[in-house]
Length: 180
Image (cartoon, rainbow, N blue to C red; front, side, top):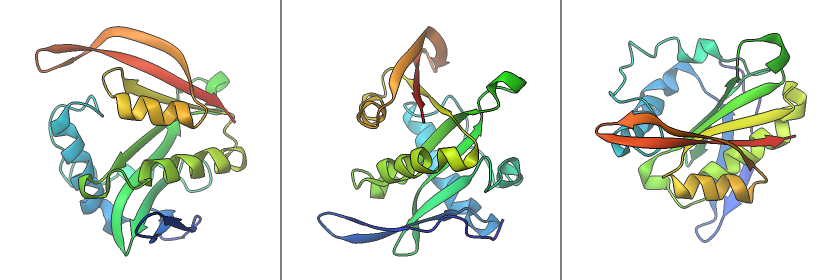
């Protein structure tokens, strides 16, 4: 996946850092995994309980395609600041136009608009990807993510109470959705 299907330059105040969104490449996997593993430890953003290895995720990018279910990274000054994936929501044909979104931001780049920029790109590009609905599965205790999704026009479409067990804590899962 070396083709760059998405490339936009954006500015973020106050530092006016240059952002660039592009398709992920195999050489990005170590940074992608580092960001993901840091999120696993927090028990806020993913149901994955154990860190993942490069070997376990070697085919991660092959599960995505730039023209249908992309895997994007956002770079700031050539550093991977965050990433976003769109994947099929459910395998049945009637859900063909629905995609599940996942977005993760490197700890040192948080509160700079990275997740917002990636989500805005996904919303904007969804029609060209033949996606009519985007669904985010967000833990109910992940208030910053819930707030961001709401700000971007997502609505609460469902709640799965105490569905996840993170260590000894039962957690609710909020289903956030948006038609595009």
